[in-house]
Amino acid sequence: MSAITTVLVTGGSRGIGRAICLKMAALGHYVLVNYKGNKVAAEETLAAVKAAGGDGELLPFDVSDGPDVKRALGGWIEAHPEKPIGVLVNNAGIKDDTLLMWMKDEQWSQVRGTSLDGFFYVTREVLNGMLLRKAGRIINVVSLSGLKGMAGQTNYSAAKAGVIGATKALAQEIAKRNITVNAVAPGFIQTDMTSDLNEKELKAMIPANRFGKPEEVAHAVAFFASPESGYITGTVLSVNGGLYT
Ligand code: NAP
Image 1 (tube, helix red, strand yellow):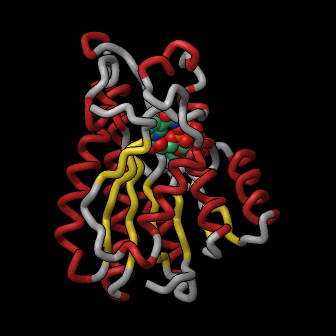
Image 2: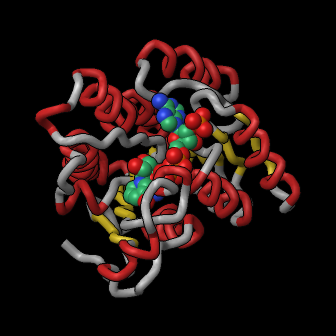
């Protein structure tokens, strides 16, 4: 993998994904900012990338929609042979918490669809080029919830645990091709996703006594993305202030 490459960040418009876009741009990479519907936020991310001296473009598609991924991402890859994607960050994710006994079919399928199906559709689209070039980094943003399990999040815990299993399996499939696959598992991070939570109450159970920042997750992603991390694959790195399972 060359030091400077094209990086695709799914869910790059807000929160952790935005911080990853900025980190990757600061490292000199060309950043593809994926998002689902929030164009204003995605444009803000791209403007911040450019303001910091980086470069990139928006690439909207719904990661959970196989044909949409093929059309938008497959089409982009075909049209840009000069910008091969060397780093893929599967970051897009949603939560929709409720107890299992009250969970509706859509709550199960949409949460699973975004994290787990999204991983599958997007990775399959990007992987062929990485295999041909015998180089690449795939980093999946999972969750403490997928390691530990959290009451009220059976859909989310199952989806993230699924991505952790897929990370380990795919790592073994493609290690010989010089492509690594790793996961970063955040605990509580200050983003829109956690804005409904009471940090003052919850921080008492976190050894670091605070929620994390998106930039602290982005740092872990950059570690796996680095050319020097080529012998690290199939691992899950927790970024959770000491809140272990
Ligand atoms: P966030 O602030 O809610 O942002 C979610 C991002 O995902 C947005 O960019 C959103 O795009 C995008 N997205 C959602 N559904 C999508 C879809 N179907 N296709 C494409 N993009 C989609 O969330 P966050 O807190 O930054 O979370 C980022 C990742 O970290 C997620 O995978 C989440 O599960 C994981 N995580 C977060 C925490 C935490 O405490 N925040 C903890 C552990 C793990 P739009 O702007 O277009 O909606």
